[in-house]
Length: 128
Image (cartoon, rainbow, N blue to C red; front, side, top):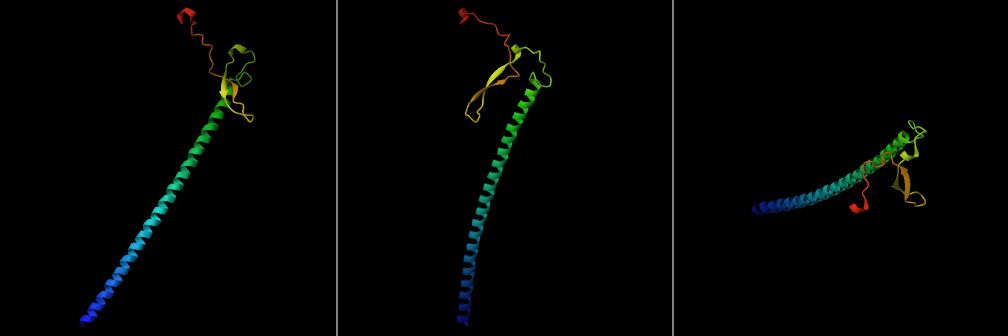
C-alpha cells in the first residue's frame, strides 16, 4: 500500500512538473507574440504618421500655390481689378528661389507688398 501511494505521488509530481513546464513555454510564446504584435502596431503607426505628415505638407504646398495664384489674379494689372493705366513705377518685383526643369534657380516674380520706401531718409556720406 505504501509503495502504491509513493508511486501515485511520483506520477502526480511528474505530471505537475510537465504542466508547469508547458505553462512556462506557453507564457514565453505569449510574451513573444505580444512583443511582435506591439512592434507591428508601432511600425504601422509610424507609417500612418508619415503618410499624414506627407499629406499635410502636400496640402500646405497646394494651398500656398493657390493663395499665390489668387493674389496674382487680384493684383495683376491684367487681372480682375487691374487697370491698364497703372504706371510701371508701381510694379514691384522680387527674386524668387525656384528651380525649373533646366535647373535655373532664380526668377523675378511680382511683389504685391512692395514699397518705394519713401519713409526712409537718405543719409549723407558724413553720417557713416
